Image (cartoon, rainbow, N blue to C red; front, side, top):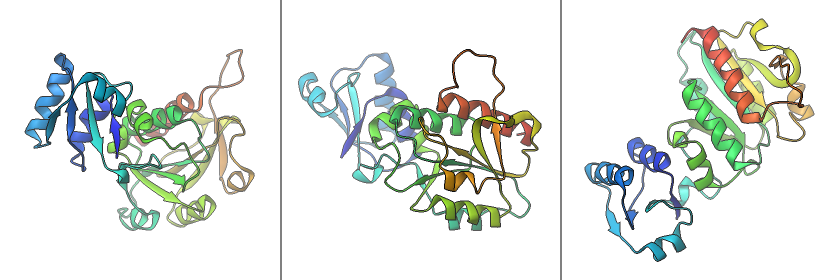
Length: 245
């Protein structure tokens, strides 16, 4: 078991209808009371506990913590789990879609912030490498403000193969690179997959070779580049803008 402590993370987990509970309550201010009411309405068991005991179970809590099962999981990936094959099979004919491919994001705060961007800009699927990305369930859920409970995610041991499968389903795949072509100059309508590389070394050579092109964000800043989660938000916004949704 692990525990969610952020108000948004707890609230969105409860709303998602996924397995969770009990909700541990040590002290409840106005915001926590709202979540207690939501939990009760959702028939999630409430347990009163002491502040000292709750601090031992869920450091950083704000008076409440939601217990979630291991399949949330110790790898830090939750939400709506789906295989890439099932995702492709479920696409409607001639429909557009956005897929985000995450290549070695190691900071759980970045991972969570990226998932929050995915929720805001309607990403249909997040693909990551099995057991190789940022893995910390509670941090990811809290940083994503609960978006992790809503985003469809697929894990795969072979991202290169996943990219080929997506290409076969009509996706154009672009890698994020600060030296890439300005993103607004690309036609990003239809089925688009965006690859984000690691915080330090960027997209791996194997995946870069399979991209149809590289896109970047024009900048006049004095430092090297944007944080990967900020870049994700800008790029996903442009893709969604071009799709007109």
